[in-house]
Length: 141
Image 1 (spheres, helix red, strand yellow):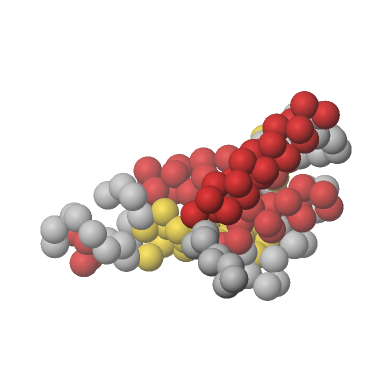
Image 2 (cartoon, rainbow, N blue to C red; image 1 turned 180 degrees about the vertical axis):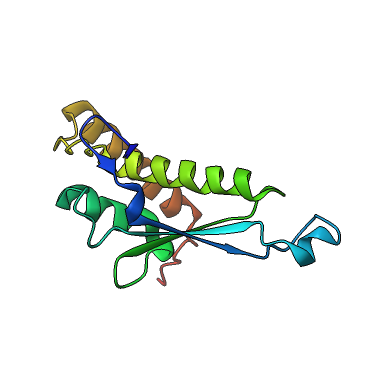
């Protein structure tokens, strides 16, 4: 079990890891060894995630989540497979922890009387500046 928060824990069988060849530094080794990790987590069908966390996770994941609800994380930052596995797992845990945080509800506020007066005064001054810049209309007598 992978513990995410006090209430959320994911079974390791829900996570699938595929190893692929990575691009970037590594010399000849990069052409021979599959060091990059592609981690797949089926968040849409996971019994470990509450529905509200699943919904926020889909929003946070963006393009990393497929239409079927599978979260795909690719890790190829390091040259070793083990470090890339750990990096992918850390990123998954961080993403789920962020989704587990409930957003603070927005408090409706009204502008104060003083701020409304300041706004109207600045609008009046701006209009006055624009009137001064206008060409003078000559009256024909």
